[in-house]
Length: 133
Image (tube, rainbow, N blue to C red; front, side, top):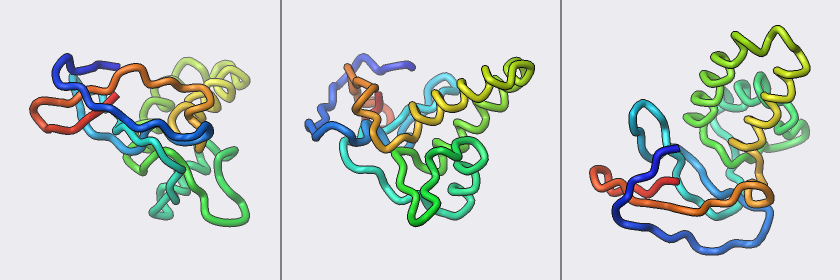
């Protein structure tokens, strides 16, 4: 994760069990940076996003209603590309691949980031004016 050492942005405190980011705000050196967001998970749209979540993170899909996550379709596409790269090595060990995918899925999209992810710095990109982690 790359941070910009310029103006600092502050996020408000929210109760435990919420998102700490949603969406992608900046790109630096080819790496996408997530947007700060302290709030509840958002409904995952469009249907293509839900299909991608089912493919990579089936444990996060609500089978009986609307699936809400802390990741956008763009974040899911980034996650999918990352998993494809890792699969080149981890597919030789199915349990390794499954464990890796679960960790990456939860880290990226779970509705309760705040229970295991702590954001220690949020900065503003001087070029775009957008904050990121």
